[in-house]
Amino acid sequence: MPKPDELIVDIAALVESEQSNQMPLTVVTGGAVITGRLAPEATWRQRVSEVLTDSAHLGEFSAVFETPAKKDGPPTHLHFHVARILQGTVGIPETGGMYRVAIEDVSAWTIGDFSYSDH
Image (cartoon, rainbow, N blue to C red; front, side):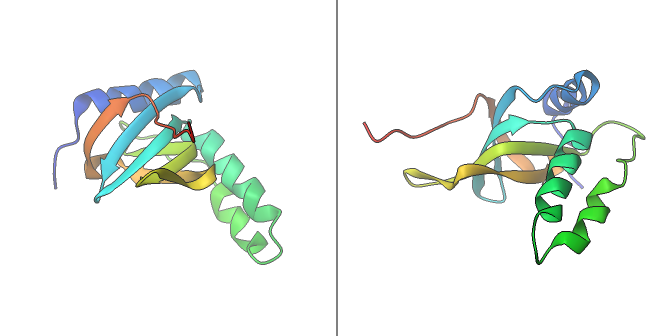
């Protein structure tokens, strides 16, 4: 099991402790580039639960995300919202999505998020 980058663990811990959702981050994981803003896990879970609750087909899964996160030890995952997977000159989805990435799977990262312009 790889040892996670201590800096990114510290960033995730700071996001968790301050209940902030303004930290822009771009990561490479499993060959994908994901860019967006980090959110505290509790905020991320709440938003995913809301989206599922509003779905006619997926509402029954919302309860899974209503369970409080376990808080023993440093963060193990990054929780992105308003995030995109970058592919070529586009970000998928265009409106941004909710992604959970294991910190140990991040092979590269940078502060900031990327966006594309038609100009």
